[in-house]
Image (cartoon, rainbow, N blue to C red; front, side, top):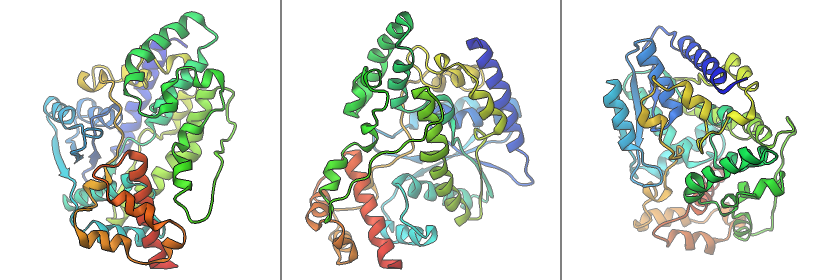
Length: 374
């Protein structure tokens, strides 16, 4: 299969998938970011089918996750309706406790709390159906470790590997924060390396009252290291988790969640695309990007920035408020599991790296879950 063949067939199948998901007796809302995933769906709906699109975006003040400029550019070019929802620390702990009770479990990551806020706004605007871009990263490549896996895939082709390596050094290496993934030869040397997924595990293991460790496990779906990562993400690691949390959040407000990328015909076709086409000129999602060329604004197609749907915990948890800190540190069963001094140390910081922000969010959720259900 040639690259143009892959592009044309992807374009056809994605357009048809969006056509099917636009069938409804009520208006449909769209989750919107500055990335190619959500904007592919929005642009197809608007430009191919003439749909009256209303996009919903979380406004983030953290430069790591802020996409306002790109979103604003797309809104202007497409001429769509748009609602920007700013993050707020108001009632964060009470909201989170209610969400933990609704989920019957700790909420997995802060992304799903933010998604719940977005669903609340969608419901306030009267919508009962919402479309999201779930699955594109796992079908077309979208994570930083996919670049390392791709370099391993093409390592037997001297010319292709040299070109891919040069593009990686120029476009990917400067923006990757995970130290393991800053090594271009990581998966060339060891195709089974996965420690980057549990980055910082030793530090957080030391924060527990009892030593605990869980080795990383991966199913064998394909001999290709890149394909195997993507299929594990699709069937076990990412997509089932996202759908579980997204559906719970959406149904909190009786909203139906639709994911056009998770279409059977589209999935089956993506598995036939030669792996060498998945990354091109240092771009992940190369096939999807070119399939959407002329439909999605170029400002989105040509951006190399990978943001992800995330938020800094300290933007929601006001650690300058003594009452908030007291509530977090209130006695509970959680301190039989997690060292109190470790949490106190996190709360004293003005900024937190992503891994520490995640751990503190896990702590809050588990504390609330134990208080509600233990």
